[in-house]
Length: 389
Ligand SMILES: [Zn+2]
Image (cartoon, rainbow, N blue to C red; front, side):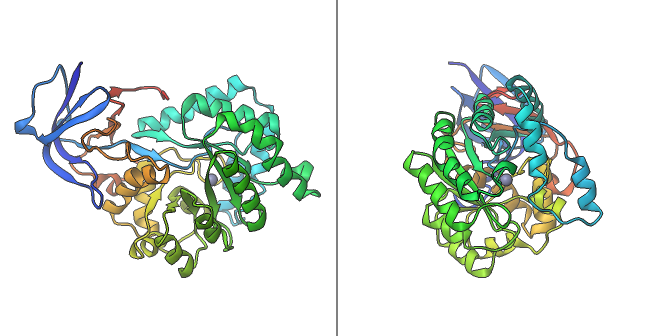
């Protein structure tokens, strides 16, 4: 059984139940893909191999619990339009749907590897990936098959928007999503998600779709209150969704309801950054003691970022997080949103998913926005340069 020591760690973030569990001047030992020892650098045991962290910071690998990473095409024109005054709406998704439908599985695999390689270089070790740019049986299955090559955290999002061919038969599309399309998606996904919002799916349609997924054995999550406030948060709690995501238009009652539920509130600072939302939403949720995650929402329309460090910086500057809270939400919070306590922390026995930073403190993640601070990413104890499942 080979062991690996990471030594000379200036600041080690282990994440306890409540806080970052910081150990200064630390070391960590990995065996069999897991963390087996953490403690003072001066007391570190011998190991077969060692990595010198050179006084840098070591954190759990980032858990990006909300992405739409499998797609084709480019939406930079939408971005320019939005930055010059157009409001974000759901229409642009259709552009990506057309490009993704016509892309081959091989092209999508190539695109996704390229996107995830960038995630990995920024310290991400787990990604959730949603479908939702196919919107017909064949293309949704194609996307989920590709997603499954890269992660076990795959999510069926047939209910992303209503495709053009069903615009005058919206309930017909809902029937397809919860019927034939869901059955075809089932072998390739763990989760089911619905974009419950104006221009997408109503609360009643969302309820029917999520319940059909649950009956088939998928676990629910939901896009809630991004553009307008509906009773999507109530629905999330009703169906025991692991996570309610976006939440930008939520009111105080929604926040209170989330705080007293087991549904994680996942905020998407990259989307908030590029759609111009503000209002310290993170502070409101954290003050109410809700369980909070942050994720990239990596998608070609509203948030084409692969960088969790950028999202940490944006969570601090736009959403009212402290740096501690943002790092915790990007690691342990994301793990909770995927209901997986084996990742997002570096406690003894947890998976050795690790980011080694060049900086002397984790604070630099927010303090130096846009700067490449991740020196190495380890997944299950192994250094990785391309994305591997
Ligand atoms: Zn999304």
